[in-house]
Length: 64
Image 1 (cartoon, rainbow, N blue to C red):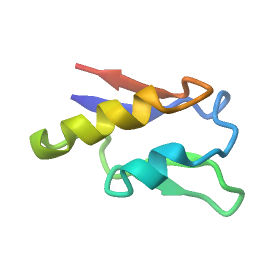
Image 2 (image 1 turned 120 degrees about the vertical axis):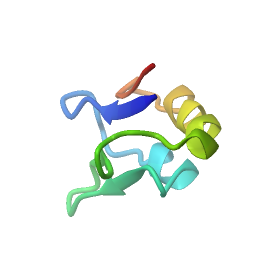
Image 3 (image 1 turned 45 degrees about the vertical axis):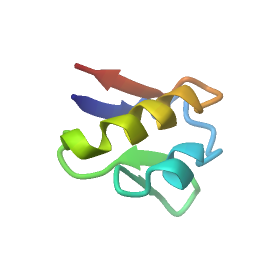
């Protein structure tokens, strides 16, 4: 599973970061990005799905 953030859609709500800080980082302007190589370890897949489901802008994208 991979996770990414569509920068054009992100509005800086940071729900993804609040729910899964292991998978996301926030820049100086409050916009989220996926950390590392965007690959989600199996033990964090539930958190990744929760973060994607809670993004009001649907900017968090999961690819299997």
